[in-house]
Structures are given as structure tokens and as C-alpha cells.
Amino acid sequence: MLEHYDPLYTVEETASALIKLLRSGKIKNIGVSNFNVFQHRLLASHLSQPIVTNHIELNLLQSSAIDDGRLDFIKEQYSKPMAFAPLAGGRILNGKDAKAVKVRKVLTDIAKKHSVNVEQVAVAWLYKLGALPIIGSPDKKRIKNAASAYAIKLSNEEWYKLYNAAK
Image (cartoon, rainbow, N blue to C red):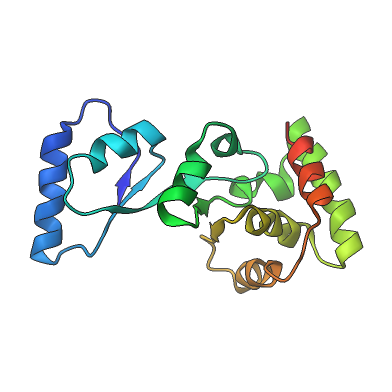
């Protein structure tokens, strides 16, 4: 997995090194993280194997991938975007800034309606978008919340209420 694009890297050398790692069996697939559409295409144009994933930060407080085309490109290439930091590093649950507080209020209202918690609704928002959240917590409660969020069926109106609250 290549983390973040490096504007100073030599794409040919990087692609060659990745192919060598694949052929030697040291890696099974090539993935990237936080590449935009053009960075992804540039690297892919020098590879004989496809890039199989692009992990992006995607959550209610960081939704730029929806607007800048990355989400659509990922769906086109892989079908399911892999979204890390689904709770914005805890900011959705505990953030004191105006945006986090505003989003949390809407999350709370929707959570009450579905008889679930705020965390589950935040993850359900990602599922409704077609994303697969990457849960980076070893906390069993967090993992259970993420798994159970799949069963929450947000309406389009609820999804957009949350999306617009974050704008």
C-alpha cells in the first residue's frame, strides 16, 4: 500500500519496484491511499497489474471525496470505496468545533428515531453511500457498532440531512 502521493517520486521506478514485489510474492496486490484520480491513473499507466484499492478518509466531517470525483472513480474501478477514519478520529463523537457539534445534533436526532447510537448512524451514513468503513479500533464495542450499523436503513432524506449539516 502506497500511503499518500509523493510529487517527487519517480513513477517508473516505483512501478518497477511494485511489480518486482508482486512477482517475488512479497505482496499480493497493489493498493494506494489518498491518491486523487490523476495520481492513480499516472501510477496505473506504468503497471502491468491493476491497483486494487484506494483507501480514502471519508466521514461526515471529511466528505471532499464526494465532491472532487475520487469516490466516483473508486466506485468505477473497485465498486466499494474503503473509508478510513469513519468517526473523524473521534471528532464526530467528541469534537467541540461548530461543525462537529452541528453534525452530532443531527446524528442524535436520527439515532433516536432508529433506536441506535450516534456512532452507528455515522457509520450507516457511509454504508448508504456504498463505502466500506475501516474500523481501526480494537474496542469490541466499536466493532459491534460498526457491524450493526449495516442494518440501519437511512432514508435519502436522513442521509442528506447529515451531509448538509456538515457543509
